[in-house]
Length: 125
Length: 285
Ligand code: SF4
Ligand code: SF4
Image 1 (tube, rainbow over the protein chains, first blue to last red):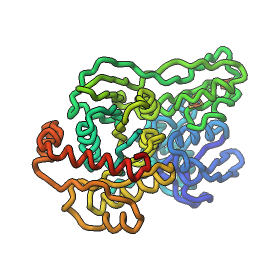
Image 2 (cartoon, each protein chain N blue to C red):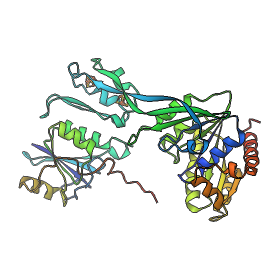
Image 3 (cartoon, rainbow over the protein chains, first blue to last red):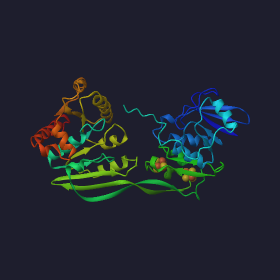
Image 4 (cartoon, chains in turn orange, yellow):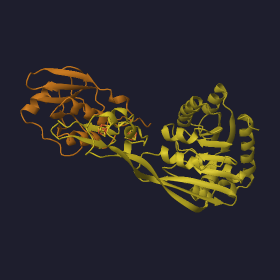
């Protein structure tokens, strides 16, 4: 079974990235083989739709769960439609997140946890 | 001649200048392209005679024909479609995100199964009318709608090339502004002599250079702030065509929805001077 964790870096010791669509990296972890693959997220360059693209990527990787800090409505719609469980409020390192997930520490989100475009940092002043 | 009036940020007096310029000239057509917050009509008080609802096409997927090939998602430059393959736990489906869709039609053109048809989604309306001899058109974007450029284009389609056209552009330097000022013969940038004003002016000037639209500056609320806007314009050789001093009376008139020229008729001459300077610097005298 494959799970996707949003991560600031490319190793299992990296901190979990709290954003989904605009995270730095995705870690795809295979719970059967204990192997993982890190992939940089190109989503930060999109003006809009980063969450949709990230969701689409998770779907195409065949993951069954996503562990992250927050997920917006667009990404949630993609993930939920694909039957992927979304776990929000996850923090610590990627390794800890995976442990927590295995121990049933997190509860699957039933709705997006943040509003549209929350991962976009807009500086106004 | 099309003159757009723009500003790197809101609240600089862009609408004040556009409205008063229009009133001072009289025989013009006014297009309010600030479709998220159109407010020129408050000052111009046109008699609206026509209203049209504006739709953008969005794809509708006939899933009985769709093979979930993913082509539509690939060609969509705006990330407005997600395709979930038929083998995942949720089964196949195509998700359309209408608020991201620009209605470009690429998905339906490229769909190999002809599974996509376009349906209309209302984004707002274009209203038009007259005030004395002045033509007036504005767009009103539906509340919560993000897709303003197609509506702005609809407002601009009504431009009468036989007349002097004044466009009140939305504030900022993003897509809607570019849509509004594109194709103008000249753009007047309204700014305030403050550090924030300067910052936004620099960005807006960069945008207009990119678009190759001749432009100049009008300083509103002259006398507040510092001299940095003047220094910048002098250094960049950007002409300052008008200065409106800070005045409580003008600000008060604005808040009552009264145009400054109806309170101070002598201002009309200054706005007509502004127009002749615009014609001179834009080379269309
Ligand atoms: S391109 Fe057409 S057939 Fe392919 S996924 Fe999109 S709608 Fe379905
Ligand atoms: S019409 Fe264009 S923007 Fe809209 S979904 Fe299709 S390809 Fe994307």
